[in-house]
Image 1 (cartoon, rainbow, N blue to C red):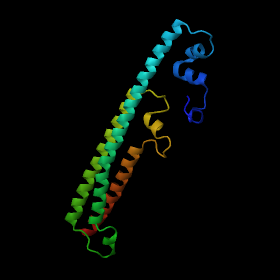
Image 2 (image 1 turned 60 degrees about the vertical axis):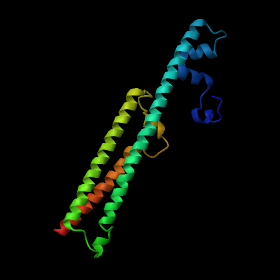
Image 3 (image 1 turned 30 degrees about the horizontal axis):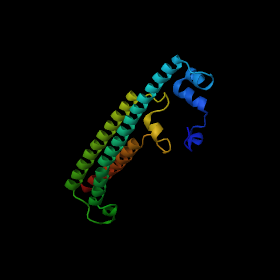
Image 4 (image 1 turned 180 degrees about the vertical axis):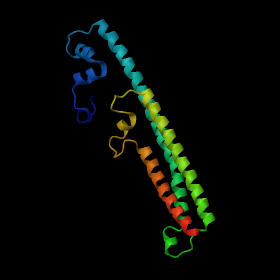
Length: 187
């Protein structure tokens, strides 16, 4: 509580903080009584041990979150690169302006690649969902707060990894529609 940002971040008193951490009985014993009885000591030590275990679990979850975000980023980057390569192979928007359009076979190959990339996105999203479910099982922050909501509360989205996967999926969907339009013209 002695850190400079405590009051601005938490806006509570020592007594409220202790009550939130250890319960109202221990808070009363620590802040309102003149002597500290042995039974208070046992209760406090037990509560401290529980708090340490909860923080260790939270730290483990944060480390898992960092790994999960990095894994997703490292798997999404090549997909983005491949989308750009397919787009370039299709000639950007230039094929509609009289440049040589890809053949039906080349377009079919591009469509197959986009389908494989979509499956990769689905696997990334599924893995991410498993990590989030694991966080929920291991942590009990509160009924209305989960680890991503806590970690990413300053962002516009609560689940940035899933939002990134969805954005890549949207790009793939648009690319696939474009390929299929081009295939219709190439027949």
